[in-house]
Amino acid sequence: MNDTAVKRFSSLATSTKKRTLKRITINLASDEAQNLEKYCEQTGKTATDVIEELIRSLP
Image 1: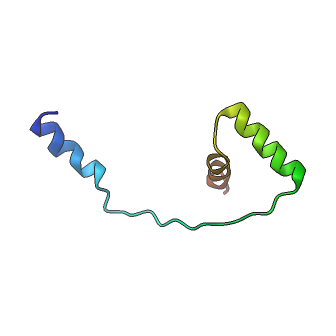
Image 2: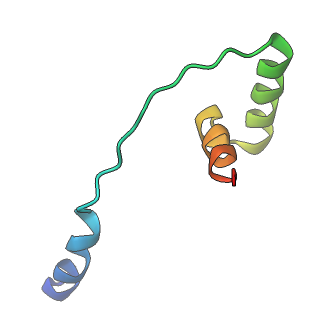
């Protein structure tokens, strides 16, 4: 990569806004857990990805 590209994209790699994470635990009934696992297998997504997408879609 040339110097211009490095200067242009280096700021993208070092975001000044750090994302704070919070760990949560949820209890699911057996059928709910099975539905989540089945959906993950069908879509190739992780359970975390599925749950994050659902949370982001909340109003």
